[in-house]
Length: 269
Image (cartoon, rainbow, N blue to C red; front, side):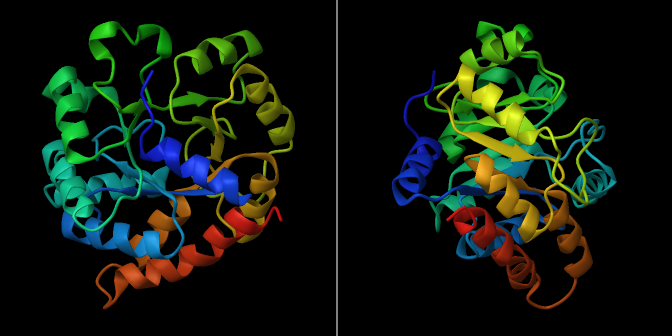
């Protein structure tokens, strides 16, 4: 298990304030790594508590079309895993926002797990979420180095005994995927959310963050009533694509995020 890092400290601070975490996903390198650094700082000012940075990958099977296109744009712009880690180092010059890398297995295999984990921790990464690595296959040689958290996914179809098994191998927080299928904006919050979050809480004391489909302040508010954190990705990535090339793009995206963050953090009061 990882020790206390920025993720643990952030959730503890929010809990003491009676607030919830707002977690934003963006694809690193979309439209450029310099833009990602500017976006990270603007998003923090807009109320983002934890930043998920996607490592661009050519076959992002868990992602919907919005995030797939972002990944392709980042690859076309020359983003690499090493470039993403350098971007994290640049962000760390100005910010201590908790950062989770959202990635697939292949890029890490190409670099070597231990080398990547060491480089990630040295760069200032706090957590790693590997979308296509089942916990059962997470052998000792793949384990995080030092204080980096291994974030785990739980799906709507995960049975309760497996929830307990996954949670026992998790650090930082549990990421509950609120819908089957791929990432993307949805028109409503899943009806099963309350029951599923309750089932996860029976298995772990870790915070539960809910994502996949949250795209409006009202949805963020509904999720915040039930969970410890709200994750928004595709809706933000869509605005990055929409505003790219316009002056002040990072601030325009932050303006979109601000009401989402406010609803997630304070909507439960």
